[in-house]
Image 1: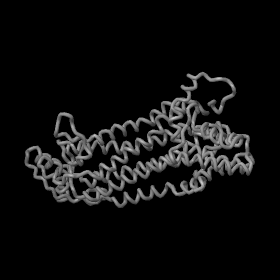
Image 2: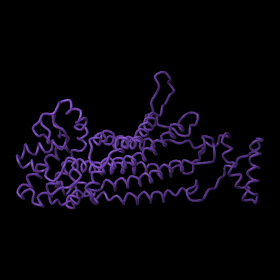
Image 3: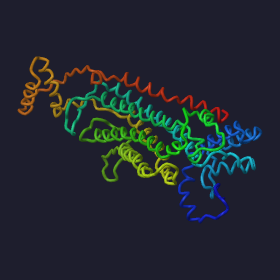
Length: 445
């Protein structure tokens, strides 16, 4: 099949294959959004007189049929078809004849792929947000369950001060709230409509861009048509940075879990069915899930840099370089989703050891508690510090394990309720229901 930009001159097959690249494969992820974007576009075209009133309903009906094919997993981009845009237009033209050829009026593949990507990204971010919230809930639950179980805190991988499983689980929960701030910013960036910017310079047709903005549930449009095209690459970089923030939290948690489950620490226990064995060492219970998660999340953290390297020396306007961004960006959502699902399951099934600090090797972590007790008795801090230090050096230090921390965020006052309130407020700010209602109405649901 000839490309939709065909002007009657043949294209070298090798050139065609090279320039299409992985578009046909990756565009399957965009198919639903290409159809939805086309539904909004033709509705707008009818309102400004670029297609007839009698043509709108057949076009929308045809597009709804394609949407059903996509939702049922029966939509394919046929061999020889360049991309999802070409397939949708070809199927409509095959069904409706000349009417199907009218749907591209007033747009370019540039703004068409832009709106597809923004719709896909907006929906995919919602899935990430929901998965982050699920992990957050498990972390808060575990923090509250084990709030009074102590474990050593470390600096420089040296024992430092008393911590608790309440603090450990809760720390990662609060980390996810900051990650949620990043996700909200990314969501706001992609929740703007580029449709109508065409190839980046607008159109002489009297397009109603506010109408397509409303139909697709966007918060606003990217107003300047040149800037709308400049968001290609920039949006992906910003969104992948937010994903990388979540990935960094998961990677750090995974490192802790691997270390804490090793025999040298033995702070946590992983269920047998969540570990793997060795081909020659019958005692092994390896934390492969956390190790793979750590590697996958480190890879995810490289994506913003990869996108930057592909796009940072480009001037304004569209360039084919942008096509390659899809190859690293689109699969990132499945990757972070898989990591979140596995970590949520693993964290929910972690068992903790409750007698860790009974071991005398951890006596020294109570040294600060003793210094503080002396200070409360009137001893100047620096003198108390030296006194306790000499006792430790001389083997005379006696640990008092009766600790009492009360300030906000400490062992005795986790503030999990405040952390949960912050997460709830962030979730409410996304406004997912507004988007879902607009798209359901557009799809005729």
